[in-house]
Image (cartoon, rainbow, N blue to C red; front, side):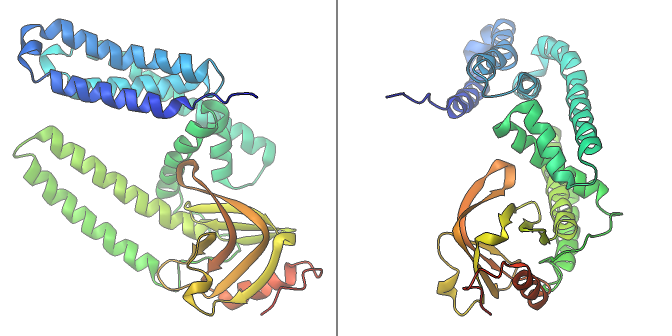
Length: 335
């Protein structure tokens, strides 16, 4: 009997969080006040050098993650150390910043180069697939999907506005999602300015942290909306390419479809194994599969489903197109 190795990621994340918390507590003690330079150097070294070394030993060396993943681990460690250590003890971490800044640019350049190479090979495909492939090649599957999600949000938020929506079936128009996003963007913008002015009365650093989080929320809303617009569900040959913005996506063989039917009651779709693809209203169409299908979600999440409950903007057109594409050997496909 072969024994499976324990997954190192939870232990590494728990250790990193525990170390950062310990450092934040110690810097406020009399012990730190008595030996500030030595303890600041020790904690900074642990956060920026020891953690990447442990990541290399337990993740990179066994092949669970790519070597380039050491870059974000180091950069995050420098950022955390600069936040925790008092300004008077920033000499070491300030020197490390001169290394971290160009490494950020190196990481971005590596990702952009991989995406361009994949685009040159594959031609016109889904940009998110290209970004995910590039990040997976560089960082490994688990970390790569998380990095790809963050880049995808920025890509759609910043560069999606001039792109024309491709043919397919969307789910965001009939419920006025664009109007709702516009209202939320306005409210977050007003709240962000007010919160910044209030919080900076106590701490300028905290005020900018709050503002940064608000900016990220705005980018997430805009990126999510553009992804809903530019990534419709479509039928590609013998495959149902299911897209729910950046939230869920899957390539499902049409041969797996055994029923296409209207939703008759909540019990038909409010159960485990059914993926809801509807923004605000109740779904109207239930698509059932002969075998379980895997859908991929935010930041590398996966889920196994046996049906999709959907409310498309043109639900009648989607049902008709799906029935027309479903193999004739599927007797259970009904209206």
